Image (cartoon, rainbow, N blue to C red; front, side, top):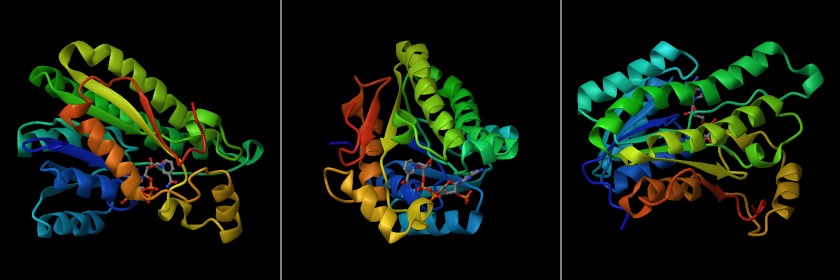
Length: 248
Ligand SMILES: NC(=O)c1ccc[n+]([C@@H]2O[C@H](COP(=O)([O-])OP(=O)(O)OC[C@H]3O[C@@H](n4cnc5c(N)ncnc54)[C@H](OP(=O)(O)O)[C@@H]3O)[C@@H](O)[C@H]2O)c1
């Protein structure tokens, strides 16, 4: 079940956290994983760990806030591996501020990286996926994109936008056997949430029926499923992986 042998996957934001776990789990199922982010030495460590475990991995330095760089990452994947079957748009940043303090650059940075970067990658990967009549686009959004969050207007707008983008892409590409789905993590223990105080984490945990924060592997498992042949009749969906904190 869920084998991905022979598939080429491009994972953005694969240098740490959720993206690293996604890259490792896709590789464990047999995919060749191209790991993309800005920090090449961290990407190389992830790729080395995949190779040491018997998997196949490659690295590409890419900045998701730079359109040319995103297009180049997809083109390089095609040149080096001859195909792109699975695109995981995972790279993301936060610039949290209350609305009245949020600067235009905070808004632009988050929208450019989290939403426009994903759109650019999808657009670049669409042609080869349509041509090969097989593709999986998986966008890592967020539970807050479904429910809103004070202090994160930019991030929530980007993540809600990513969910809408997912649904439109799903409708446009379904006839070519390309699916598009979103995964919405709840609170996951990574560098992004490491700055939260223990008190805040305890408060969050009280809102989570399963009684714990999530792990990067919890999200990666959902991505592996959506990438697999077993998920071939699922498109345009939002798979919530949040311990039950939001039930929609
Ligand atoms: N952690 C959570 O609780 C949580 C909850 C819901 C959703 N998410 C989403 O899950 C995704 C991964 O989050 P995480 O917690 O694993 O975050 P993280 O530990 O901060 O990792 C973010 C990744 O994105 C990459 N990245 C950031 N800006 C980039 C850019 N301009 N170009 C290319 N890569 C870039 C980073 O690599 P470089 O810095 O090397 O570029 C890193 O690999 C994000 O989209 C986040 O919004 C996380």
